[in-house]
Amino acid sequence: MEDAFAFIDELKKGDAPDTPFFMWLSFAEPHSPYQVPEPYFDLFPPEELPALDTGAADLAAKGPRYQRLRECWEEVLGGAVDERIPRVRSNYHGMLRLLDDQLKRLMKGLQERKLDRDTLVIYLSDHGDFVGEYGLIRKGADLPEVLTNIPMIWKGPGIVPQGKRPHGFVNIVDVLPTICDLLEIPAPEGCQGKRR
Image 1 (tube, rainbow, N blue to C red):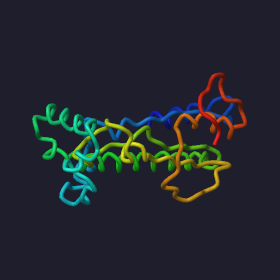
Image 2 (cartoon, one colour):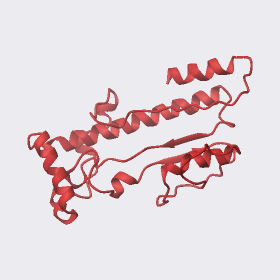
Image 3 (cartoon, rainbow, N blue to C red):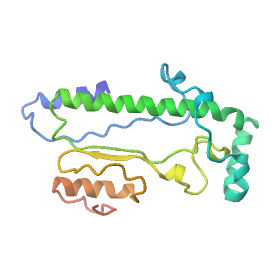
Image 4 (cartoon, rainbow, N blue to C red):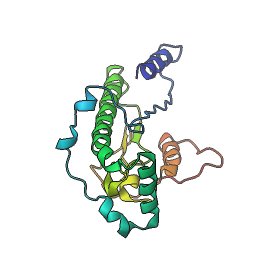
């Protein structure tokens, strides 16, 4: 986060402090290898997490691709998938909280620099994770909701709060042309997607 603020501060102290800027701030988490530092490691004890909706017993109904993915993890982890899932879930939730805290730092930093009202901030992920559902971890077979139901939050000038919309269908390929539309600039030549 320090590099992001250094970039903004350097840009804003130059000859044209009102020049618009674009910054892509990417976080690797939550991602394998599912490691998270303290205090996040112990923030969500495995035994206190809510029960999963599905388990390995549900794989038969999902078909051979799901079953093969489980077999792959059994091979990689020496048959210890079920034993690993509670800690994986705990660490995954810790990584989500770490990410939430970093986003909070970003928004506070923009506010301190008086950039929060005229900066477009887009928060999204590229995919979800099984995190134990169907007895699986990471990503893989098909496109179940646990892998495709991702966060996408837009905040900034011209964005009217819509509240939570848990079942919207959006394609990430549409993000760039939508940004261009908001900024009233043409989308780059050959840009895929469409404005929303």
